[in-house]
Image (tube, rainbow, N blue to C red; front, top):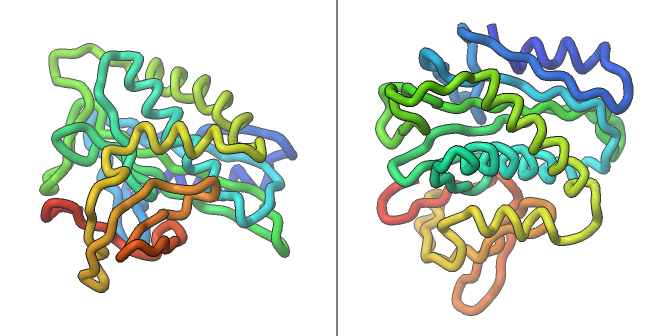
Length: 227
């Protein structure tokens, strides 16, 4: 059905500190943000990282940021130009090539587990406007090799995510092409300048000289007519 559904099952029976990975060749019920579906094309990577971590609920988006950065670094090691866009996308110059969906269980203000579903269009893409894939059909790329590189990178980024400093957002902002660019908030049609994200993954915007913050996934940005 979906790596996110199976990830929940694994999370409930995992031990504290575990990191598990659920993968699938085909998903019949691939999940995206909100009510969106995620189409897993042939040869693409579909997986969920299952983290049995007890962290403050307010800091959970740091782990999604860490996963984005890890994927970007792994793909860049193959000579690919990769960009991150708020709040959860992975892009090439030509379009969206991946995304991350977070799912969690929490009690009070602490998480019981945090799952991160990663979908990457490696060598093929869905028939959706604005989509792209990372590798050409001629490039012989094994998913298991890419996944191993992402896992290794993610383990290092998890360590950074747990620190109470600015390393994580600085990395993320360097990967984002929208920082200091004019954007439009889709819901209100208001123009502002995107200043990047803070340590909790909130978007920092500037409107008429005043700073305003938005939590992840609460608004949609438009830039140059695109999402």
